[in-house]
Every structure is written in C-alpha cells, then in structure tokens.
Amino acid sequence: MPEDDARNGLRVGGWIPPYSPGGGPAGLTRPTAHPYADSPHPRDSFPRLRGESATRPRLILAAALCLACAATAAIAVVLDASRSPEPVAAEFNYPAAPGDPQPLFPPPLGSEDVPVSVQPSPTDTTPPATHSRRWTAPSKTSPVATRTTTKPPTTTRPTTPPPVRLSVGSTIGLEAADQPGHRVRHRNYRGRLDAISASSSAGERADSGFRVRTGLGDGSCVSLESVNFPGYYLRHRNFEIRLDRNDGSALFRQDATFCPVTIRGGAALALRSINYPRYHMVADDDWLRIVETTASRATAFEPRSAL
Image: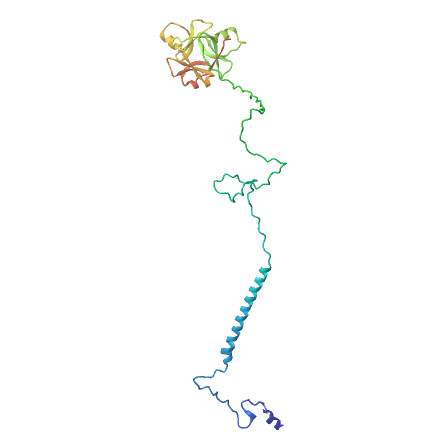
C-alpha cells in the first residue's frame, strides 16, 4: 500500500519527523530559526504569566481577607449586643440608727463610730451578747451577793533543829555520829569508843558519863570531867586522849580544854584542841587521839543523855 504510506506520512521502519512534511524524497528538513533569536530584545512569549497573571491573584486574596475580617467583626458586635448585662452587687451601707443621718462609707479617720459587725443583728427576743469584762461597782440599792472564801490550810514547814551544843553544868554522853551506840569512855585511864547501852554494866555506863565544865584553859571552850572519878579530866598527852587528875598546871589546863566546832549542818560536833588549833579528836581503831586534820574530817560526836 504505497499510497497509504504517502497519504499518512508513514514509511517502513518508523514515523516521518514532523518537520519533514510529506516525508518526500527531498530528505530531512531542519527547523527554521526563531525570528527573534538574534534580536537584542527577545520577545517574551509568556507575558501573562510573568506580569498580569501574578498580580491579579494577590489582589483577590487580599480582598477575601478583608471581607473575612469584616464579617468576623460584625458577628462579634451582634453577639455582644444580644448578651444580657451582668448583675451588679448591691452596695453595702453602714446601718444608721433611726433619726441619724446616713454615715459615710468608709468612715473618716478619727471618727468615733464603732465598727459595725457583719454578724446578723439580734432580734427583739434575743438579747445581744456582751463581752465586756470591766468590773463595775454595785449600786447601793441593789443587794450585793457575798462570797465566802475559805482560807487554804496552812502547811507547817518542818523546823530545822537548833545546832547541837555542850551546855556547861550538864552531864552527858558523847556518841559517835557514824557509829550509833558507841560512846566515849575511859578504860584503864585511856579514852576510847565502845558499844555501851542501858543494858551495859553499871561500871561501863559510869565510865561513859562526863560533866561539862567551863574550859580550864579557855572560858569559851569546855573541859570534860569524869562522873565516877571526880577531879579527873579528859586531856591529850603525847597526842593520846587520857584521863588524868588535874594537877593545876598551865599545861594540864591547856591539854584538858577542847573547843566544840559545829559540823554537818549543826547536827554534830568536832572537838578541837586549844593549844594545837589544827588538831582535832579522832577515833583511831577505837582509841581516841588528836591529829592534824579539819573539823569536817574529824570524828563527829552527838551529845546524848548520860546512861
């Protein structure tokens, strides 16, 4: 079908290029040059896309935004107009007494008005509560209630016993405060501490009895004379306590004189030598002697009645 090929521009082996009209034997034809290719001002083939077509959509978009804002504002005005007004709280005023002008709110500084309570006002049947604690004197016409007061019982404090002392002229026995039942006595003319009681023999009880005399060497102190050996006194000799007869010498009077010193809060006594002021009577293995010590560390004696 050669005629069909000539009419349709077909040939065996493929299509005829569009720039070869008819596909004749003249051969391939090349496209002609663009008429404005060599011009210094080439022609713009798409002026609408570059100028007019780009500006118009922007104007349309801006107009649409303006219309939308206007519509929104109109809707807001309509909704605000349809809304009912909010209720307003009632104004609070201070209550005024009948016949008094309405007080200012708030009251001016320096005003003598009493602040009003926010609690409900009392009714005619409920009397107002009063909180005043100020005491007012009762009237002379109204009876005054008498209140009897009972006097609280008085508590008697225990009286502190007077300090012990040795009374001149009395007959006593000296008991060791730290050894109850042990008394000062003389045995074989030496002084010692032994357990002596009412059940002891008469000789032992007599050995433990002494008469308090005014001090032979110092009138402010005392001397202890034996009951069963009158004229014999307790004295220190070679620092031992012995029972010797008064020979009238000055040395004897000094050795036989002791000054009682109150110790332990007045409950006991210590015996101090007057010619050895730093020496006190102590019990050394139940034998009595004077040693250099303080009154608080010496043997404490308590005066007792003679047995």
